[in-house]
Length: 54
Image (cartoon, rainbow, N blue to C red):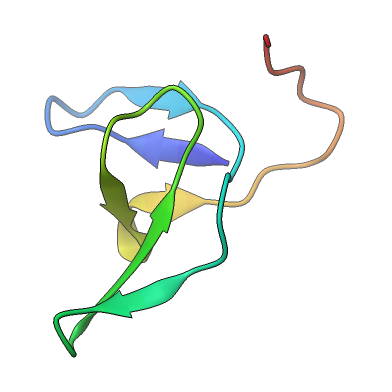
């Protein structure tokens, strides 16, 4: 996954949870190396050939 940060940069990571709906209206997911949940509209799936550091 590529997660878009508030400053416009991207962070390559992997998911650590299934998505769920937060507070009845926001689809979110947990990502490795990022604290808290992330809105699904701020993450993009990328090809499996990208390497993510452990």
